[in-house]
Image (cartoon, rainbow, N blue to C red; front, side, top):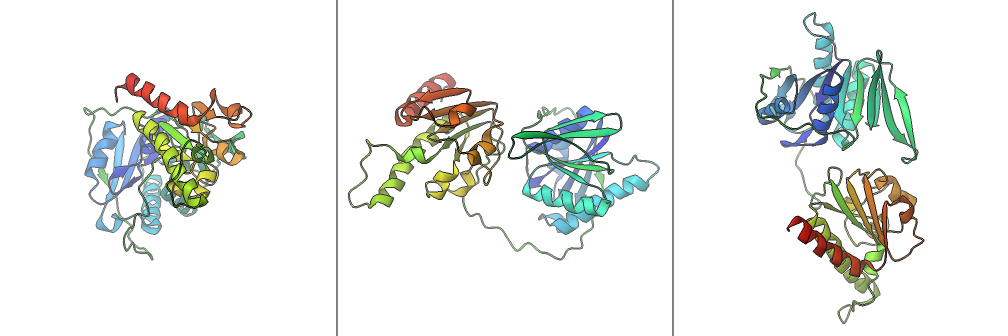
Length: 344
């Protein structure tokens, strides 16, 4: 099977799930990396090191910023050129890591190529001349088997659903330049960061806090604060404990919707149906009761640890390990134990 893998990046920072998609493609047959942008030689080199058999590069100043029109037109032209050339086989499959950019790019390219898209794929296997994709549906409660009859098949791959190939610096090659279709009706004026980036999707460890991080009765708020201000102050102290544990474990800080809605922490940390869907190796839920909206976002973590003083909290039904007790005593003890274990 011949597969094209789109390597998604932002200003040269590669989405790790791109390499996972490349590894998946290699398991199915030949894998060719596709890279768009400006000054992307380092990314092309990395693609060969991660196992790409070929690398196709559209390197042009007009592709410096992602814009759906030229990116989709360039990708569609590349695929069509393969299909019409007697010297190259038409791709059977085009893989993308699942990001906001690639959802749009895959959809627009599928329209141009008159085919379909399988989104958020967590499993992919070949049966004869068909590809069968596994996707979570109904808030992750059910896994669906899907077949796309178009060709090429386009699919976006869920982050951390497939193993990432190790880079081998001895592997190299010469990238093939492709024609750039630069017509676009939009223009990027600039970027503005609303808050510090939180890469929950790629985190191997996530420590999350809920409304319970503000319920420390032993903490006396500074004089002069009203009830709301005191609640936020206590939540800050609670999330400081969550953050310290996450840092010791080399992980990211998450939060429940309740904690975000209460203003304890920015939205970018939210895990759940209306936040980020994550699949870390370890997920530690602190003071989170386990509403279905939150469970949808983290139930596929490999190991879930729940810390809650309510023994009947729904989160314990999802957790492999549960600790019933005061998180304000348990988190500092866990942090000290892990510091000794990992030497941080």
